[in-house]
Image (cartoon, rainbow, N blue to C red):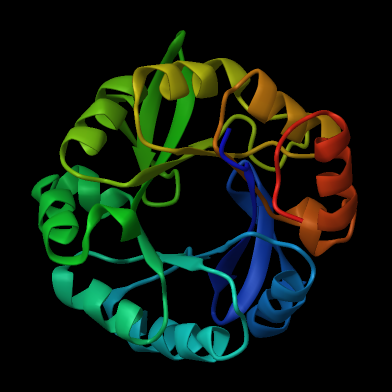
Length: 251
């Protein structure tokens, strides 16, 4: 059985790490470079950086931040936010990112997934999907969850895999920041229907939420933000408990 990954997520706005609830009410959570160094030294398997207010003008700002982080850490990290072209990805990878995450741009231009996978390899292309349960159906949302679409989560995920994505980062907007647990039913369906790794995101609050994401949701990795940023759960205690529960993790 492959080891399960624990991934802190740093949502970046104006160069600072922020965290909200249900994608709203953001509060400051610290300096991203310092946090990245801390997580790298304290057992995180990977990091995800999402520039949640990215625009074309700010691509250079994010690229500079990526370079600073790459010089500081020794674990893989994924960068997302405002990426819409091969050129954007080239800049970030050249500055030290190991993977990139695309979301809204992939929905608007699905061919982008094919192009990026073809040029850089599927292993470094993550497609992030933000979805909300509406009338019993999971619907994909864009632009940091602000724009609803008619796209079905599972149909879109299958298309994403077919087009060459190496991984899917699924965030339940209903669970995000609530600390009530991950959307395990949807996670299990994704994990069962797809052959690429699924990263669970949205809802971590207690250690047992992570064990549920792996045991019930069949996720390959679990991502969290505030519980790590504000030291509510340490990665070492989380991994110790996962090992006790028989879930394989890298120590």
